[in-house]
Length: 132
Ligand code: TYD
Image 1 (cartoon, rainbow, N blue to C red):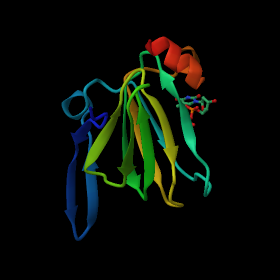
Image 2: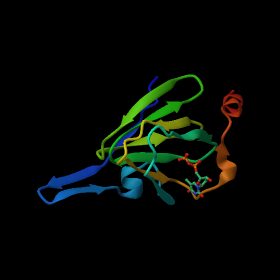
Image 3: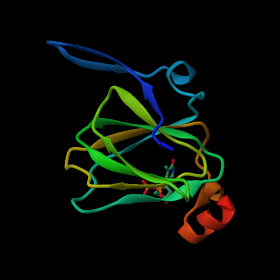
Image 4: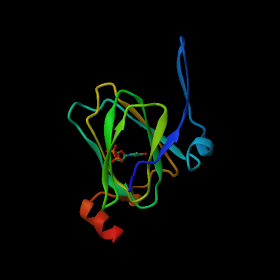
């Protein structure tokens, strides 16, 4: 079973540059309540290492590249993040980790709710227990 669910984004490219368009519920499976950006990650650093109880997110790499590991407790998959043409779903109850950031990597993440630390599961063991 593949954990990789992607949503296509319109890219308008010409001699003047590139325009990437993301229209909330039209291009994503939800209305966006929060957007955040991950950048300036130092070489060798990794991020994530958590799951969300309810939050659903879609991540797109705007520049550079990184690797996203998605893990539902049974299946684990590594997805290369290097395209503005599609966003990757990070569904609720998916353990995720981000590795191998290029120096110039910029990740944009769209979320269906506001920040709430209570929604995080930051222990892998707790994540596995909750999934049972
Ligand atoms: P975290 O989600 O753990 O980052 P990552 O998964 O990229 O490693 O968040 C890092 C810190 O930033 C943590 O203290 C929570 C805080 N934070 C907010 O305050 N608001 C937000 O919207 C996000 C995503 C994080």
